Length: 223
Image (tube, rainbow, N blue to C red):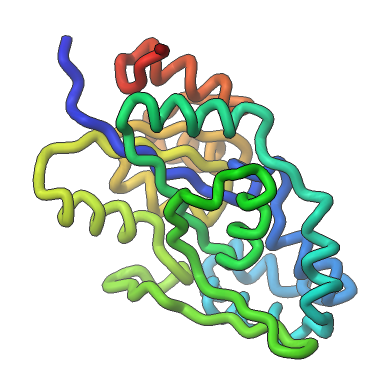
């Protein structure tokens, strides 16, 4: 059976990275004050944009201190091999995140993965302040900073030819992607969301699991 061409969209925090970088960064540099925002964010009473702006306002740290903090974070043990497999299969691999681009690119650079496209909110450090910006417009979503579902839909429209959209994620910020994706890989909070809403998905532990399933399904070629 011939498969349609595929494109793979991956969340970063807790998916490509083994731990949630944004959560830990804000918790560390706010002294844990950001924790008070999370119940309202998870319940949908606080948008990601408002949450990020409030979290960033709590941060007082310079670039050297923040970048040194980021050195502890590692990528999923199977991601570099997975990226190579996508490249060899001529399948687009795109990072979609509701976190901040500066820490995503910094960590990717350590692994030689900074060539990958990153669709995320912007973060810049000025003195001891972290400045958050929103460079992607959401047309209908009012919850997300950069809506993953909308970014994926935009890709499909730009491509202009039939394509299977595959999404890999793990959390609350990934739920919008499930309305657009043709194939979903889910764990943790995203898996619980899929189960509660009867959304078909594959479970996974790391990107080795994702690679095996996509090779078996014919989306990727195991050369």
